[in-house]
Length: 463
Ligand SMILES: Cc1ncc(COP(=O)(O)O)c(C=O)c1O
Image (tube, rainbow, N blue to C red; front, top):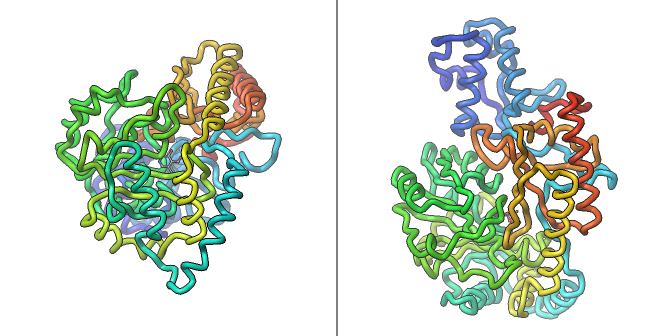
């Protein structure tokens, strides 16, 4: 969406005041507007000439400010098109990573499909499908069979749940987008773990809310800090189970004492990926008012695009009201197949968990061997390691890594304000030999960086 030069000028206010060169003041102010969510992701900024005219400054000043934002990853440019707002660390559009099999894609944390059980579940789903032919197929809450299966699943995990507490969505990301629309207004503050899942940050910025980051400690969550921050917030969003990106599990002692003074979304997308011991009980066992978001994307397969919200029927009604703008329902066959899969115990299968454990260990060994100075604590579950480099090189590393055969998501993608420049998220969702090859590529990229060779790709493509 285009933003007019007058709108940008209005948001900028008195940017001319203050020390330093004008282009620096302008780029700083624009960056703040982006971080604040006032200039939203994807917004197309005015041309340099138009903005310069309205601001009463030179085109050189605006051009230099835009270039700084491009260099730091806050703007993307294409020939003959307006510059568009982005966040540092967003993957390059067009996904260079997927361009060829020669580049190993470590930017996504998603396992492949368990082929046979999916085939069998879809065969059963097709047999059941005719039951639905007499109905219209538009079901904003999801089909009864799946809502009941999700509710039964919560029950088996220790949280009695009825099907009217469940709304089926097109994945957990869709659930978050719906909740953001239903619960947030522009300028509302949302407590987030810092780092956190990047598309959640984007979702909150898209509704012009303002993320309020609460730093995670090496052990995870600081309940006091969360409570303090939540006093000023409209909503909190936490990933206590095998957190993305750190893989941390919120300790039972913190769970028991965590009561926040604002509605709290608990993202349980990774909850069932326990690699050591049992999966934790659903968070709402401790926090009955929690708004839980779940998904089968990681425990079964992302291609199903099935997730859900567990909340009070009253809140689900509010969500149902905003749903049409994002789609009118969820495909019936996928829902039927997912219901079959959820009723088959256990998912994820033991075999999937064993494979993930082997891959996690292979990745750790490869890091030990090829990047021994990188710190990467071993998570007890989930799909990713959160690696810390000694130097703040993450964005530059992500920019040149494809030249060395691997694509990664830079640390700043998982935070706001350019944080996490020392970090890289490394998923272990590929076979051990591919992971080892990827780590060798990363080590080559790091050596190239420290030698001063910055590769062929401009930082704007990754930032
Ligand atoms: C923490 C978290 N929440 C939500 C999602 C999105 O899940 P889905 O694929 O079900 O939309 C992901 C995907 O990586 C995730 O890691």
